[in-house]
Picture 1 (cartoon, rainbow, N blue to C red):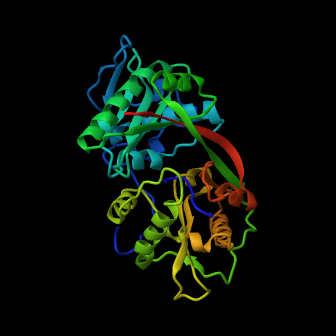
Picture 2 (cartoon, rainbow, N blue to C red):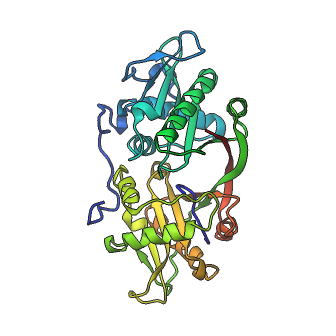
Picture 3 (spheres, one colour):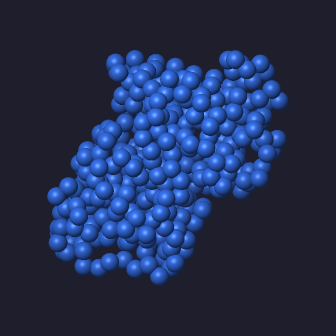
Length: 367
């Protein structure tokens, strides 16, 4: 359910609203050391692990990842995003969060491939945040240089996900991959590897003018530490109405939050029954800091309990978030949505002025 706002649509004390990491843990590189969008492979730092031969490609190598690889991975994803989307999509914080997620061991769940000249040009990783029957794989390549690594990297991810499924006692595991329709080389590799199209997700965005105001009288307020168990309960209950729901235990959810580089808690909101402070929480909005460096507020999850949908709470939560983002100087608000969501989420988002920026296709294969 990550990055898919939903139906209708740590510590005991919450940290400060805009806490940011300093130098990357386990790395000598800080944010100022990261390569810019125009960096080439030759500008990347050397490998941080022991490489081995990449099957099927003479002179190519592959190795597991460490946090010292964040600059190289970020440069690869930025180059890939710019070629496919016209702008970078991944941020430094997202790379760090991916490699340090509670269910992730980057030494065996992520791979960095280098060409014959030793320069990193492709990256892949698998993750399974719910530790369930479905694993997810992402592959990125430096345009014009890294695409030959797609097939052998995909084979490594399939083997890793299948082995993990066996160890977890999963008899009917699934591996999913996302790609843009324009990434024809990756689509061909996925199809040759037994993956079939499943559905489409959309990335949506709304410009912010600075004139946005939050609605009043609807019982919406920022989250408090005491709200977090109920916040999680509403997320789980509401998302159970969507396709492919996989439950996440509260402790696992909190562990995932605690692993994030930063959280702006003042951008998380709850909607209560009635207009008083003592009402029950029936709707929630969770923001993420992943697009801050692009001047964008990001809505990671939006959920309203079934009995309270179509009452305006979803739209009110969104408008509250828009006003908060705009007050911080953000120029846009974004989110991702599953276009097969049966709760009408897509129409909710278009109703508050959001439009599709791009669509990504989801493929899957059995393990």
